[in-house]
Amino acid sequence: MADDQRARTLREAVARELPNVDFVLGYARGFDALHATPVTVRTEADAQKLIFDETCVQNLATSLYGLTDKRVGIVVKGCDSRSIVELLQEKLLDRSKLVVFGIPCDGVLDLAKIRVRADTSQVRAADMDGEELRLQTPEGEKRLPRSEVLADKCLRCRYPNPLVADHVIGPELTPAAAEDTYADLEGFEKLSARERFDFWKRQMSRCIRCYACRNACPLCVCKHVCLADSRDPHWLSAESTLQEKWLFQVMHALHLAGRCTECGECQRSCPMGIPLLLLKRKMNRELKDVFNYEAGVDLEAVPPLHTFQMEEEKISDRGLLW
Image (tube, rainbow, N blue to C red; front, top):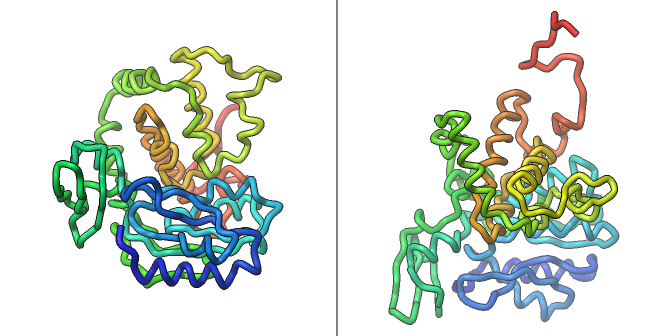
């Protein structure tokens, strides 16, 4: 992608803050025009490598919990900033040790969609020209509509602007949607219970238990004591059975109930293409309906499963027999 004023402004802001932090987490160009890679910036020379465009798909907030002994700068998109808000809500981060460079974002690329639509694995150059993605490939130029290559989360994004930031790089953007209608869940919810179960059995049969979904999740902060790895107590075996795969994914989803910010890193990192975000969004919809809560959007809010009330507005337990 071509350089622009936004990237130059980011480099200048990061360079000014370097004396105040141990390092800054940002994005640099990857091995080709469609890939950005996380980079650790420690010097002004490192800062000149920084980029920000539609290829910056990773949620860098995933690294923060392991860096609580450092004062860290971090570059975040609007959706990524929700992960920081949630970590701050749970008191897993110290706000005074963070310098957040928030960048309004109008969408990132879904490389899986591009591979299917462009039918090529080699890209020499890429440029987002208005509503088109132009790719230079060995077979010649290919043009793909922007709406067909953006990540699904970007098409329904309501938080393109950072919700927490010390430096905002670029003008605010208009959300892609006024509200989340959960249209992606409609077809799934119309299926019978047996059909839904059969769907997940087919999906989970492809899981190789690599735990990329867990490792890429910014809210999975107990990776070093994960139930999937524990042998004392022994919650899960190392067997690659459908039952064990499904049990792990159910535990993962339940541990993220009321916490998942739908950054999509679990699904993006899955080498088998399992639609894991569908499971997380179903859980989020239930939390929204019952508790009227959305993760990572209000620093002052308390996640519903982190508190207790004698009576919930939408849960009536009066008169129940015990």
